[in-house]
Length: 399
Image 1 (spheres, rainbow, N blue to C red):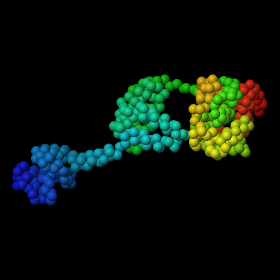
Image 2 (cartoon, rainbow, N blue to C red):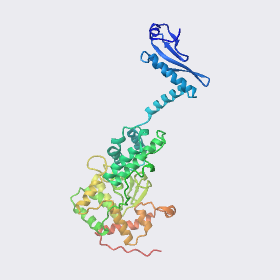
Image 3 (spheres, rainbow, N blue to C red):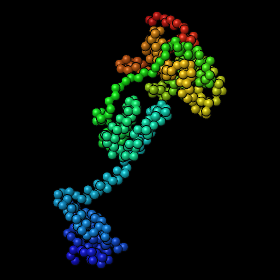
Image 4 (cartoon, one colour):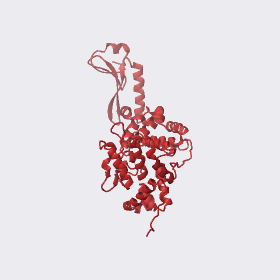
């Protein structure tokens, strides 16, 4: 038949394979459609490669493609295998998540490790503000070091601490992508250290007020214009030296009124370990007032007036500010710790009362929670607060 021409192709109507060159054929389908096929033998295996349909792919284009494939085969390459890999890569690429999708997956994975929903909200808010505008819609395997550097530097320019957190969260997301084999390296890792704006790492402590002023503030709470539930929550926080979130999320099933013990589950503790708090007589009095106030209708000790949910932590700070103090509520824990130090309370008891994790070898051997000894200390602290910060605590000599 010889080489095909446009006229010959137009005249072909019988289904079959019509040869043009040694490896190039025109396939006529039963329905009349026509397409180019190349039959190649590589390493003893024959493969048919589709080169496109006619007339969209012309004779000249089909011959050029066939010639290039023959050259590849001569070099030991396998055009059929290359095409198969390309199809697999394209399919796999479609399965690679965007950074936004990877961030959501990471958030769901990590959410169970966090104590409250606020942490998740803050985490995602930083992604939406800094990371998503630059690379939210990019596939994670398309994200480059420059993308991360630009995002982190923008966050650092707003606030250094925010920049550090944003970088850590991006690294966390790409770590998830790496663990799931979507990327082969974490481009938010150490490789970008020299590209990120250098900021000195500072330890920022919560400002605290003198413990005597805490006593005066405790004495002044009753005369404030705050809601009764807010006053009681603030008093309970002062008496227990607990964290704000631990207090406002406190539930009645955590309180044992018979033994005067508050057991905070590990899921709500910073250390992720259960913590027992010995309750002083004053703390028990506050709880009894809270029970009468709520009428036992809420599972929360200090419920919000806006439905079945805990009180907002912001109202405690607002109360503190109304009493003339600009420090943070969390700083009251430091005030308690200072009082312990100045009155000679043993360090291990003070640390246990604050549910601090003791590091190193000391922590490894420190097994007891010193509960009974802590009860004595918390009773003394309560007496000090009730006296308005004027009572002198005299400790018995230690054996």
